[in-house]
Length: 401
Ligand code: EPS
Image (cartoon, rainbow, N blue to C red; front, side, top):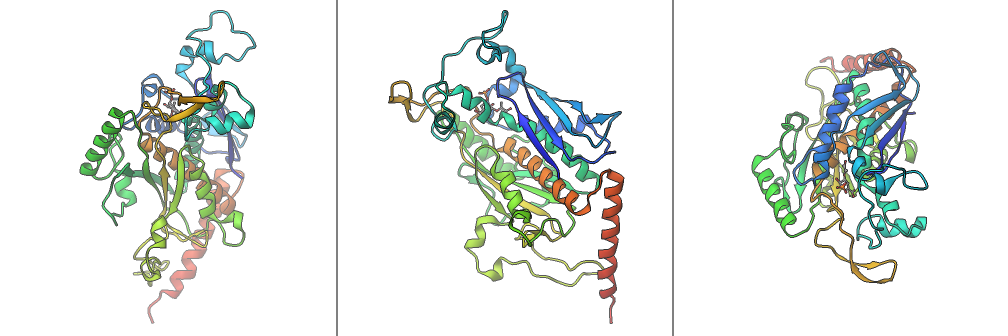
């Protein structure tokens, strides 16, 4: 079982993540992992914080001479902004001598949509900072570090992941536009919003500008696509083994995600069966049957079917508004505008990169479940044997009469 746990506050010293269950013998490319962290920081609409941070992971445990040992892997991502927050975020009972930054007033006016109010009620906090520091999407840097490890495992067995942004506010790709894995993976890293259509992207940028001017924020949608995924990951046999359910949770638990779709997602409710289900055709040569469409997003019965796995995440607008919504000051219980913290106007492209990481983690877990072993060599052997068995089984039947 592959799992991770994170810790860390947005303006604390660092984020940490422990990844447990990685096999031994996997050669790690730290630069490639840091490239994922860099990608998460990008995107038009982010706030000033991203100019301060330059996220890099440091490996503290579980790797020796560039290879995983099979032990838990500990990673650390420092918060450069910490120097500006020491007087507000110190760990000790009393402020340590020489603490830098400024001492900020308590946050007492919860932002609608944020964890502020629910968190303050649940944990009994008077200063909402104790809620928002951990509820912050800054935590997703640790997830991308964990997902970066998972995708290096997946790359060894030929599975690759890409994403693209399909919706920002009311600007979206034309209806029915299917974006291939090749297209999504060819999006230039300096594309402002990771959208495959230059004209739509221009309109998305303009929509973000308008929202910023109005002191407002925008959400949107992104799609994550995995290619090279073998059939048979996940299971229909038990609810918690269904891979669509596991992917749903993995994306739904990303900050601000309010809905997740598999394949064409909510569209399935509107179309007749004849326009939803992907027909099954004989192979052109040898191999598995082929599918002319992939509305199912590579998942049938909670099991991968060999097609690209496609998952859509729907993100609500960021809940910190510069023109604040109505709220209540919890110290007096009187009406007051919601607290305003420095924040982003739109973070959908960042969420797409987090979506890649989360999908990578779940696919790596499902892959290990089916082809598992303690070392990468053992896993590759198991995978090769099964792939050969499947190939032989179907190639025999494809022989023309
Ligand atoms: C966030 C608020 C902003 C974002 C932050 C998430 O931070 P700050 O208040 O420091 O400007 O930039 O995201 C990140 C720091 C990040 O690394 O993604 C929030 O309230 O969730």
